[in-house]
Length: 459
Image 1 (cartoon, rainbow, N blue to C red):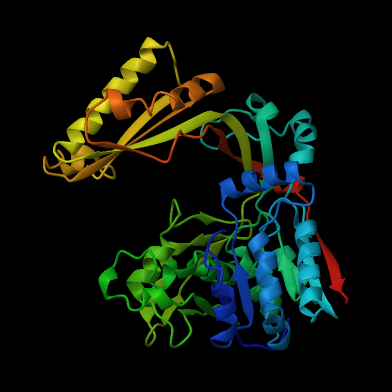
Image 2: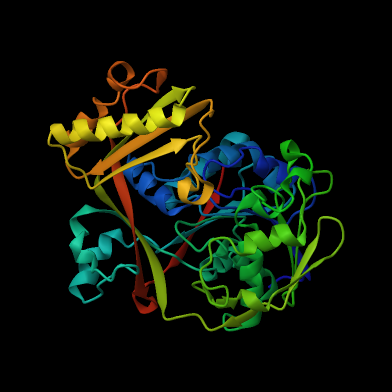
């Protein structure tokens, strides 16, 4: 616990691929205490696992290491602590790469990196199954044994406690693997204010703060539906900051002089993002009730959140499992006026017939007409206008037989000459890709153990 009454936790990555400049700007455009970086989505873990399979030193978010190198002096000289789930499936390698980046930047002496371990249960799967932990699919109820041989990654969502421990042991940079997104923000609050792990209301407040900023600019005007055309300076949009008070008060804001907008409708949109039952937002640390939250404008680009309620966490942790599930390929043809939509639909009809003639079967064939109600379909939007200038036919197949999928990729291009007229073939022959599927499961918390490894960087 420190003596601060309020901390400023800034987020600068909503996903791996977000702005490379945002972390540096968050550190340089105004005061912050913590910088959080959320790199991981479910599919990202399987991508990282593939990278590690090819290279034993890979498996983490490389953008993070680059950021550490570029921002090393800001981190050290401004005393900013960085918390990131950049470790992916290989947090140790990520920490070693970050330490090297600090050394190369010449600001390495005495910087401590805390590495949170324990989320990766891939090596333990057989042991768990043998001991009667079925890891059933949360959607279908099927036991993991059904797809065990095809599993690529299995990671437990850890909570905020190990992050708080790493900070308590002096870490200036905390690297985790899979953890709950909001835990990146809740961990610093627990560390700074000494919140008990059964102080459900405060844990809920910290979780709400974390959820509000975890998706980057979605709470500061990015990807916002409410009056989006009046949002200023998208090109200079500010990333979010959560001001968290010792008693659990939360204000969402951004640096002055940046673009974007922080208002009640925008923050409300983000709060409702990716949650099922808003009264029961389950995290490893607490069950937060979003229905009790009050939002009020607290000045320009400031929204105050209060009233978050919390209940004891469950006895289970969520597990994110990825597994291979066949192959897919997607092709694209663009048809021009007149009758662009009718041509695209006829091309799909021809393609399906030719696949039938070849005796090819797939788990799924899907076609959509971009430019002609692809988002909502004819049922909602009505038939496309006959004068639509162009329509892109995007057609894909998915199946377990790679040869069948490969043959599909050779049936797209011929449509340019032996199908409807006024067509452009886009992107060359489709590429066959392995399909990685998602298997959500629960594991008793008694089966999960985490630990923190500290690394001190020296020149």
